[in-house]
Length: 377
Image (cartoon, rainbow, N blue to C red):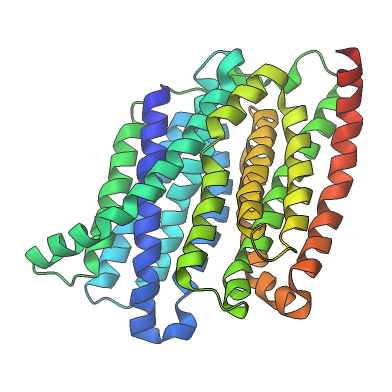
């Protein structure tokens, strides 16, 4: 069952990248540059809402059916974006991006389906494969934008409709791939966190993992949202900005298989601890302009990866999967909006202080739970 999960995630990410990129251009042409960010904000909010919906469908129908419903809603959203691109009111674009967010939520939550498809000893590795595949889809999607415009022109449609047609095709491909996912109900696959541990200890462990995931994402988004402003203030060109963003993206996803192997070997706790330590260290490094800045962004990306996959491994099979995912995306919108404003107030030193204040308490809690295990080993 792992192959269709991975394929669907890759296709959905390709669809999201294609639609997000061109929706900004279409909105700027229709409503002006000041509102160009509205469709992507709708996509983020749709992902947050979609995560809750997919979680509820999972409880009622099983994970496979829930993923199919999520991708199906994404297909409907993609169709609305095409209608908007060929001349319908632009409000349909916003609605379409919101519904595409539900498909995105299904893609993100499908990592838990991958974890349930393999033996316990390889669960984290399977989840990391989905995260890595999502990157492949996101990286490959942009290369199809120009051909999709030519395809739309050949059909007599506006060129801007091409990427949206690409998005519909990719989401539909994800839906088809999801039909090959075997139904696994959450209650049938208890997570490792439930085994041989008191209920209160399990709950504390799960809540701590959720906190690590949310804090890691919040810090990453806050620091990265200020990067374009930072480079502009320092007179750096778009070429250097692109290099910085690529280094960060590489850190986020390229080492996912290594993270999965580490979790399967040592458990989530040491990985989350390393993620928080790296999160604090990379945040501090961002205060150093010059040669250290780009490596700091790479390390920030990998810190997120450790926090995200380490926490996900702990949440597998619990009712918190979709709730945490929804919180992550809702917080993303808040962090992205407030980060440039905070940067203008105090630059990266202020953002770093906020990051450390968020991460240190969690670091101490994780360390407290990890230290006895290290001592026993």
